[in-house]
Image (cartoon, rainbow, N blue to C red; front, side, top):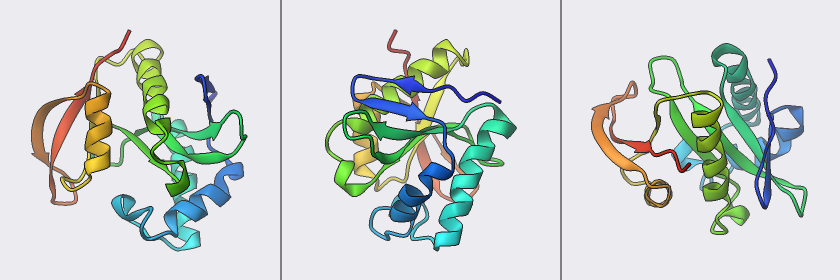
Length: 168
């Protein structure tokens, strides 16, 4: 399957692959950075997460992209779509701590959402997060997300579900 590359003013959203091993290791083995994503994980589990992210494209036709800063050329996180077995599809993202606070997740999310509506022809882009994840909730609000419900997820937790509108 061909995984497209997306570009924005400051970012390249590129297909995941072996080149992302170091950034996945740094993020997922850092307890503070990865707490909202099931971390910390062992290096082997971080590698398995990368493999699963790449495999999502093959199995589902969508997935996450690596976020590369164009000027610096470094990989700083991921953004795109995830859907585990039994879970609703969601817009997701994570950034290394030093890349946070610069609007990169917002810029990457805008590109991913636009791609989903334009190229995947999705009727809706949705996301959800733990109730205590204030930064994620703030980003969803900045993207124009509207709460469309609350539901119980396969892990037994209740979460708010948001729809992200098409900006175009």
